[in-house]
Length: 409
Image 1 (cartoon, rainbow, N blue to C red):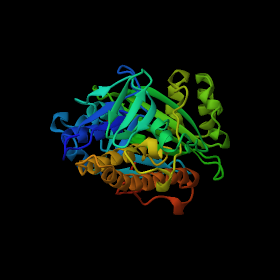
Image 2 (image 1 turned 90 degrees about the vertical axis):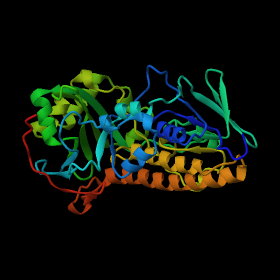
Image 3 (image 1 turned 60 degrees about the vertical axis):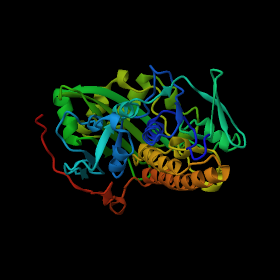
Image 4 (image 1 turned 180 degrees about the vertical axis):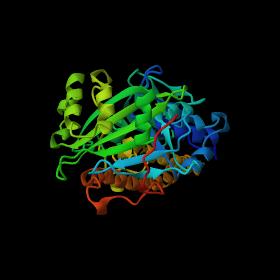
């Protein structure tokens, strides 16, 4: 590389974090390549929607102008409702939660819309599954399944929970594990009265305590993935969670169960709920069950487990977490913002400088992300089952009783 120039960066993984990092590098004229294991016509979207809050201003400032407005990523558009996240606790009648005041400080983004926005003008190389990584004194090379390879000065592993980059850094070992949390997922397209009923329960999403007792926490999370252009219909989804020691086994039964069995179990676990709080489960039907259910992982590490060098991690590759606190995607984007700032500081290919700058980023990222991952598991186990455990502030918004309302739109 030329003296005084920025290193050439290889990004392995074109999920939300990898794409945001790529846009940041593109804006700052830092040379990079970005690779995605999936083919261009079949990119997986892990999850339905993601909450964005304290990073919105920095997100806007970190991407090039040619991305255009991010307004369309809001999952509620074209509806006029503000973001709302509701809780229905033990009595399953009282509606608590948070609601945006219309200032736009918090939005819930449809993941597919957000990914499409971040992929704007991004030179993604598809069908590139990483197999092997090699480092020399001043370069790093990634070898792909299709027989090709790429060489750069820095490599960022953003491939998600199954990250080959993480395994390389850990010397072939791995520390990721399954949480003690069973999951069943379903989705349905709703319109008319059915959609109005769901919007009334929670404009964006809501959580229902369906536990039979405090010793066996189980919850139903329902959310709007996206409202459609007609403003009268939309795609809804739910994830049902329950504590289950068997869930740590790779052969846990939901992973191989039929859609009919998954649906039957969901009906059984919600049979005691008021009709309005289980209506989305009933409405989904066997055909709407996600088979297998969405997978969650728990990954916590300490900074000393990962070497400092030309290879680093971000997102689920470094700190995968259950979705109970809804923070996995947020931390991946925060990683991208922080790593983008770190890379902008490097104007040399000197190994010592790269190790220092990337090491500082990596240590903070691992400590912050692992803490969030641990708290996600703790939050599920505690599950706000007592009055003292109920959160008072969520994403900077006060948790308050929310009024019941009739949706006219």
